[in-house]
Image (cartoon, rainbow, N blue to C red; front, side, top):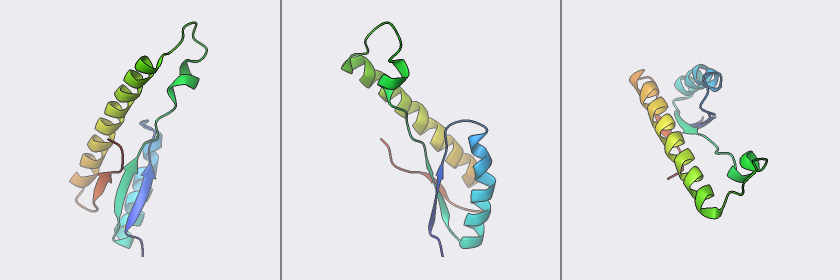
Length: 94
């Protein structure tokens, strides 16, 4: 029926409440989980600060966000794989 189930996570403990249901559905369907995290745009977050974020600084912030998200998703996928019941992989990104 399903081969892959996309699970969006935001890095919070609350967001991980979706994982037990996703695991349950994946087990019954014989599917694997694909974990994703969407990164927020940098400029809107910092737009109210009294200084301007130039392209270099924005790139550095975005690169840091990517590294943190990648590490989080890989760690979460590793935790899920330890259950041995379904496959879980980080999807997309650098």
